[in-house]
Image 1 (cartoon, rainbow, N blue to C red):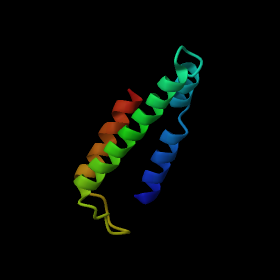
Image 2 (tube, rainbow, N blue to C red):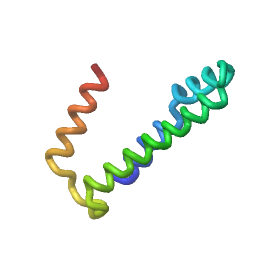
Image 3 (cartoon, rainbow, N blue to C red):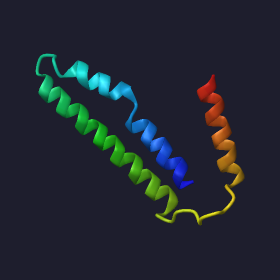
Image 4 (cartoon, rainbow, N blue to C red):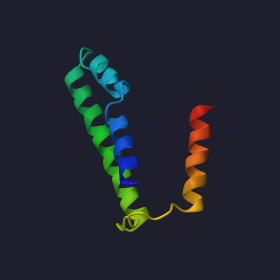
Amino acid sequence: MVLDLVLIGLAIALDPLPLTAFIVILPSQRGVRKGAAFVFGWLVSLVIVVTLTILATGNNPPQPNTAPSLASLAAKIALGVVLVV
């Protein structure tokens, strides 16, 4: 589970789209301010995701080597189908 989350986080962090958007924003008029706002917005969204995750799990990670719940497996399958489509 932790490895899955680390891989997902790494894929999101290395995604080229935010970097491309940042590079396009910088040379624009008032680009430094827009770039700073872009980075600030990204950090705020990251804090929101972390906060929601902590609230949803009660800050209690699952025990190691436990089987995932049926709801978790169904959510993964549904998300995979949506992403493939």
